[in-house]
Length: 236
Image 1 (cartoon, rainbow, N blue to C red):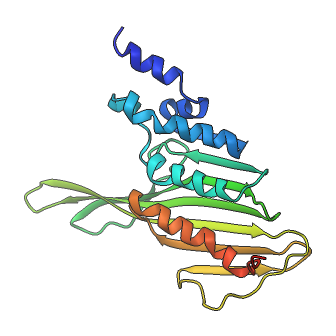
Image 2 (tube, rainbow, N blue to C red):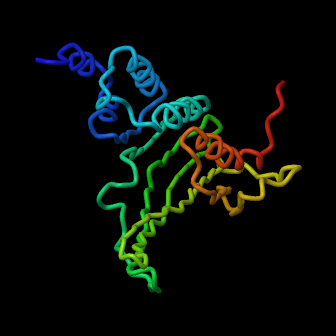
Image 3 (tube, rainbow, N blue to C red):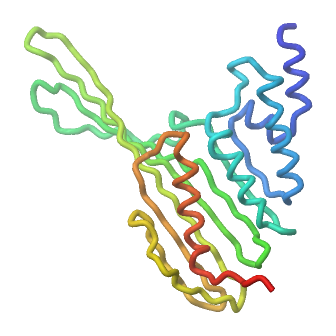
């Protein structure tokens, strides 16, 4: 049997690691030690798996792994829950119905459809008693146009335009009060504070769909904004 050693290596990986290989999805709520075990398993992937069809999804290394590390830094004895769907935009269930658009010659046919990909969500119980939640959704518009020139030659083109929506919230511990930071957030981040017994600080952003290598920076900038609204304890 071909690739017998590789299949044996995959069988020894963490179960969530295997799910990323076969299904390109991950969903779990675990303590920090279990996430560390997953990270150790993922770190061995490139050395043991060379076949292209068994590579990890692109966003695993660029977004998921560093995000797990950051969420586990301040979790203490709490739990971290992550759901990631890294199958991409062209998966059934993510694509909306096609809509016909008005066509004027030389355009013979025009239609558009939307893809909504809620590919990442996370929840982390932090050491100070607060709870952080995160959700990332890609919304992409596809527009397909068919033209016929005077010689009767048919040409078709598909254009895309996408945005990424990031929503984060931090539910403070009971009795913890927010404090407005000295500088405003970036112009592309909106912050809302809902006071109460447990104050909730929400930060939301809507940005042009970034490249995979740039997504982590945008996500983390939005996710860390609620932390600027609480006073840090001074060291004794």
